[in-house]
Image (cartoon, rainbow, N blue to C red; front, side):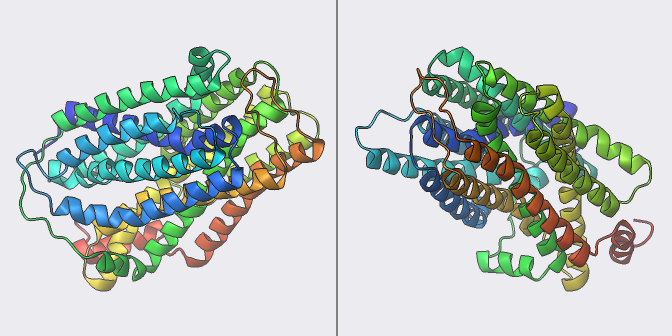
Length: 460
């Protein structure tokens, strides 16, 4: 059955909603609990890392559970709907922490609620991506639906990056805590509505028996595919660099860039960055491909763009342009546009690794390989937020827990440490990624075509 434009639109709306939720949590939870509520950055970072790694490891189990489900509403939609409602409620609780008399009580509350958030998000995220083969049997439609989902997910993340702090200021006034509570409520409602639209329009064709494998078999299939492992490791490094940037940049604008209008400046920077990240996916990558540049070379160009952006940003900050927003935005454009291109490329490379694995073993493992995208993004964000928390404590950043006070004044060494952390750490991740890619990656465009012809024939 061929999918209609309306169905593809409904699927994309679901991606926007769910990634708004994920972006709000991944980008602002450390800031909320460390800077506004006063918990140790290292403690918050540690809990976030452990919870996300646990959540990532839980993904394959959820995949098996979904595969064994059979109801009159289908296999995927019951999980998508129920997981969405539960996750929306937990999201609100996450950003509406009660006032506790003891710090230890707040620590326990945060740990429990965040773990619950991860579990409930997995409940809806796994069936969302896994339902693609069940709603259409047309290969082209499946490919297009994957692109729609990934692109719209990027839009959802960009919307949160662009508007969160501005909305926090508008809705909360002098209280950032109130602002985050209101933003979380709005995002939760949008999330539920978006997934209901997806559930209504994306009906499964049939509920035939779905082949399942054990978790052990899933990881065995992954580890036996050296190219899938290379791509997965590269995705971890690239996403870790991006999450490090998003985690640190809010502290930079509040304490280094500073000023009464720091939230507006942060919002403008994030808007420019988010816009160019989308343009990187939808415009820059297609232009580079239209010029006949192979994907492996596009990857190197994108890495070089990002490294150049980070390097220029560090020089700008060191040489006294810290408060010049237009100048700061220039290297930011390079970094975010490059990340847009890289997000598309890693999906393309994962697709190629499926054919590579079939050539080696005679088995196609799409579900195993593509389920790792969710796994590695969560693992990368967990490591990034842990490094952010530890880094903030090492440089001695003093949080501003008093909502009525002006932002805490940081020492010169703390501000320099913040500048180094937000540029050098992401650069190290990208440098390791390019070395790994150059030494281990074999799936060039020409080699992928050879594999395709071998498996399907030159006329396929």
